[in-house]
Every structure is written in structure tokens, then in C-alpha cells.
Amino acid sequence: MAKVPMAKVPMAKVHGLEIRRAEAGDFEGLGALNNRLGFRLGPLPAPARNPDLYRHWLAAAQGTRLVAVQGSVIIGQAALTPPRQNVAGLVATLSIGVREDQRGQGVGGALLEALLAEADGPLSLDRIELTVFSDNHPALHLYKKFGFVLLQTRPEAVLRENRLCDVEDWIRMRL
Image (tube, rainbow, N blue to C red; front, side):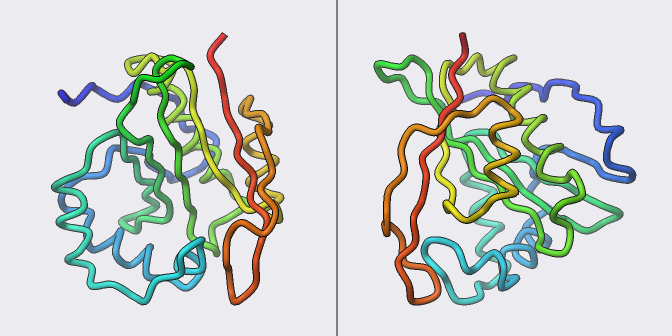
């Protein structure tokens, strides 16, 4: 799949923040971000990983992968899986994460805005899907703000910190 140039999206709302495509040289920054405890406590908590793993991940990456950089530090990442065709049309799955000490400052919104510009522009997606913990209220608010709607709640679907937690599946459809 050929790389499509990233759509131009104004990012003036978050001072000093750059949103760009992930590059091969980002492997150490992505490793540092993903090895933070707040990131590793996701649906499948993982032990800290060697940052070199992210070098291979970036080399093999398909889909759209963005990073949020402040100064020279990666403070967030977002991705859309390679689009797939199904009965809903052209569909991709979204994932997004922001460093815990940078949350609530517009980083997630800037990443999501840039991904949706790609989805609505060059990728021309019909549907975007995501899964989020039901107790992640800031993320739920952000997804609603950007036009996502709740598809279903899956009670006690994921083990997190030794307890079963509810997750929600959300979608955004192009009209």
C-alpha cells in the first residue's frame, strides 16, 4: 500500500505540539512512551519491552501511525489499522494513547483530529471502530465530541489490574 501524504490540519490549539507520521527514528521515543506504567496497564498488560522492538514494529507498520511530539519527546501516539472492506464499506480500527502526565491538555484531541482528517480525506473511510474502557470518561467525552457513537457495552470483558472491567465499542460512520 502506497503512503498517502498526510492531510494538512491546523494544530494551533496545543502550543508547541507537532503531530506527524511516525518515522523509523521514533523507535526509542515510542519504546519509552509504551513502557510507561500507564500505557502497560491496558487490556493485556505487558512487561517493559526493549525499545528495539519498536524499530521492527515501525519497519513493518501498515496503516496510518501518528505521533505527538513536544520538544523532542513523543508524548502521544495514534493509529488507524490498514483499511479493510466489509458490509459497512471501507473500515479501520483506531487506537490512541497519551502519556499520563500530558492528558487533559488537548494532545488526544489533536491526534484524533489529524487521524480523522486522514480518514475523511485520502483514506476515504466509511467507518472507524474503537474499543475503550467504560471508566475512561475523558476518552469517552473526546470520542463523542468527534462524532463517535456507542455501539455496545461488553460487561466484564477485559482483565485489568486483576479485575474484570467493562469495555465499550464505539463507531464513527461517514454519512
